Amino acid sequence: MNFEFQKLSLSHAMTASVDALVVLWPGHVLPDAKAVEPVSRLLAQAIAHGDFELKAGAVLSLYSQPGMATRHVVVSCSADNQPGQIRSAMQAAWGAVKASKIKRLGVHVVGDVSAQGLQMALSTLADASYSYTTTLSKPKARTLKNVRISASHDSAELRQAVVHAQALVAGVELAKEWANRPANHATPTHLAQAAKTIASGRNFKCEVLGPKEVAKLGMGAFMAVAQGAAEPLRFIVMRYNGGAASQAPVVLVGKGITFDTGGISIKPAPEMDEMKYDMGGAASVLGVFKALGELKPKINVVGLIPATENMPDGLAVKPGDVVTSMSGQTIEILNTDAEGRLVLCDALTYAERFKPQAVIDIATLTGACVIALGAVRSGLFSSDDTLASQLQQAGEYSGDVCWRMPLDDDYAEGLKSRFADVANVAGRAAGSVTAAKFLQRFTKSFAWAHLDIAGTAWRSGAAKGATGRPVALLLQYLLSNAQAPGVQKNAALPKVADQSVQKVKSKARAVKQS
Image (cartoon, rainbow, N blue to C red; front, side, top):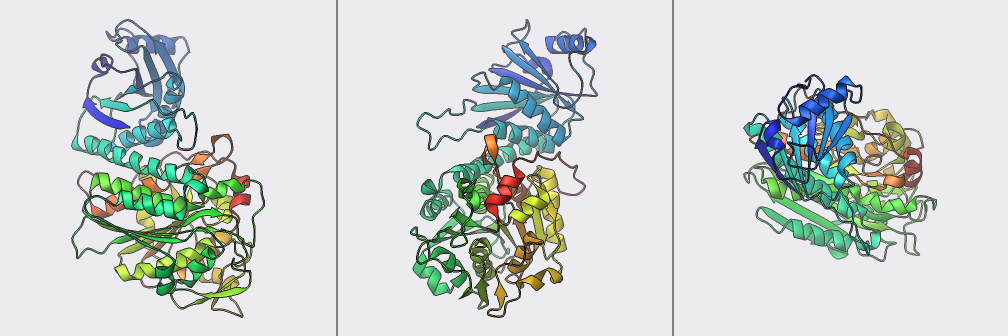
């Protein structure tokens, strides 16, 4: 999807050659019943007759009116033009026009709009119009190809927001693509091939390690998870070197369990198909690197993806087995369905070699986080207050929100083991916190944050599909951290409206303790 920005008045926006025009109309702007252009006149009539309310998401559809170059015009109220209200307005507007086979869409924002609001309008439109096609014999591909967004004023910040949105959408949709693919179309080998393709451009490097290299590194926890799978593991190391060689990188670690049966601690059958989404963290890392390739910011970023299936064959690790991690710490595996933390802990140890300024791991880790936060906010755990604050602010700015959870040392009591340095699970209580406490043991040499995206990486039910989260949060954090030209700072950002919770309980059953 291609985005273009223009400075235009509403009357000029209506003369453009597009298949449909969406007008985002703020609630505080009263339309002129005597205006020359028809939208204001018709909107004023609708308000006078009580057929249109100036509240976020209200929609008025107009068709083939005199003075309009396009047949379809949809007016959608954006209230105060705040990002959350713009998101509601765009979702409603797309619902009104999506039945038409639109290839070129115009979006005009009436009144003042921020760079954040403009970015939200475009990312919302892309999300609403997204269509998965890869494994369908007769796919209904997205017809919308080009979007021209306009406003009555112009600035470098608005134009940069459109550039940012273009890259963000590319990254989010790549993350959706790989998370949505069935597990037989998204094996560890497939992910490694995708990473190499993304990292084929300038400033990129990609190295893929197989079972022999991983064994040589001493990644006993990662290998334990993989030993029951016929598909060979892959440890993917991606590097984006846009900054000075002396600049310490940010390391992103994405959990890449391409299918999670639970292993010997096998999951219940209902909703197990959704465990193809257990590589949502890995997909988000791929998405971020895709966006970095388009934006080319002057920063250094490393992406680590430990990728494997978790299967229950005769070679699979058993409850009670003790393995040695790359850090040298021994782990008693009490539950083989708590495998995500096992692959992550070795990747976190590997991250030390990059002498990072920060390490962020992203994982569909616990059903407990789904129960705690639902499908609205990702769980954020961090040992560093500054890093946690930056991630929270980036989430609020991008609309990809998170919520900081506790890391009190008392939560680690349940991880004690008589037979190893640590157990991989504690009790049911505070399961997302105890999982984070397990990971924290492997992060003592750097600033670290953990994003539990078990509730936010995909939707269940009739709208089943990957969300592409938290690509937007991570990209905003990286760009703000780099102080890239034109990127908005995170301080004092307005909050963005929450997303609705979908199928929280069924998702929690499927995710369990992975």
